[in-house]
Picture 1 (spheres, helix red, strand yellow):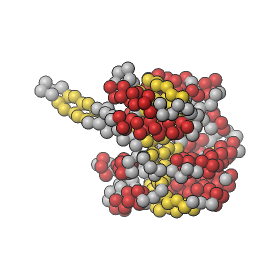
Picture 2: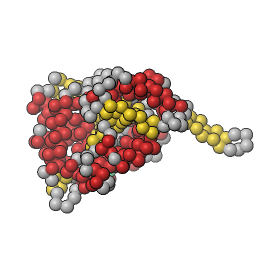
Picture 3: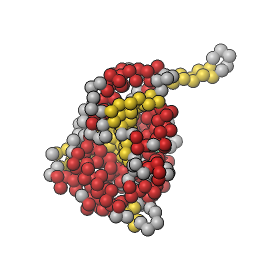
Picture 4: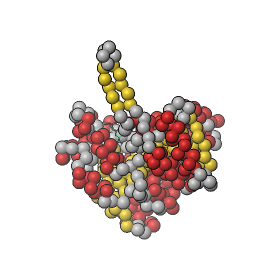
Amino acid sequence: MNKKIAVIKGDGIGPEIVNEAEKVLNKIGEKYGHTFEYTDVLMGGCAIDTTGVPLPQETIDICLASDSVLLGAVGGPKWDTLPGNLRPEAGLLGIRGAMKLFANIRPAKLIPALAGACPLKDEITKNGLDLVIVRELIGGAYFGERDTHVDENGVKHASDSMAYADYEVERICRVAFDMARKRGKKVHSVDKANVLDSSRLWREVAHKVAKDYPDVEFQDILVDNTAMQLVHNPAQFDVMVTENLFGDILSDEASMITGSLGMIPSASLGEGSLGLYEPIHGSAPDIAGQNKANPLATILSVAMMLRYSFDMSEEADAVEKAVDEVLADGYRTGDIMSEGMKCVTCSEMGDLVAQKI
Ligand code: NAD
């Protein structure tokens, strides 16, 4: 198969980690007979420096005309004092909107070789931890009506409305159920239906969608209970689906349970197969240009791209297995280094994963 990938290397460690992800993709192409065609496009600080804006129209056009988009990271102190609409992060929100990416998929998996980095006790993680959070990305409180005003008595008020339409809930629930079918066949729908109207709509729609997936086990769970269960018994979860604000918080909680920021990939998906794949960490300006960054989150993002945008499950499994094996062999970048392990550079880590494939 021939696939066109728009590549946003971005700022800081972005170019270094993306180079390693391309190395791994090329090896997959060689082994399985695919061709991956890369087009580099600008976004973030480097786009501001070159074009004056964080997200040039040309970048949007090329991303929309590609089969998938790979992103390193954007931002850095150089651009921190610019006004909000001209900051690198405006590029991130802009590209998600332009690509109509309504589903953010974040796996949280405990890699056995890195179990020591997990802050939970062994007795809690002994049953493993392998879950996916499916977060609604373009609705809810972050996109609802907001207001700040001072009333006639001089009291200041601020509000954000958490609004959802039934079709928005339905499409994200379908993403979760489809994903569960490819995994552990279990969905938890997270809401606050005991208090919020928007959650009662969420629950009603989730139940309706669940009827179309009789082979998938389904359960509602309140968001406060979910936060507790994640640290009490994370093994009970397979796929969790939730609205934007709850998902933002729960996915960070779940990431921390797995240990390192440099290990966690993500995917943002819309209606079709076009997706945006990126590590969850930032541009790490403190280690940029030193060949020290951990490229594994970006390499694992490429595995998600293979699985979700290109329907290449075997190839995705091969990437994830190679990462597991390199870690089991004792190789570590500085951020996940521990006693007795072998410390390698960013490019050496990429080489090791590619060799395992
Ligand atoms: P960060 O994730 O960049 O870094 C936090 C810490 O983790 C740093 O010490 C860094 O060295 C380390 N780290 C992060 N990724 C690593 C990796 N792959 N390998 C080894 N160590 C790694 O977060 P920050 O410092 O808060 O933000 C830095 C810049 O990144 C800011 O400009 C921020 O706005 C931006 N940012 C971008 C994205 C994105 O592009 N999606 C996400 C978050 C932050």
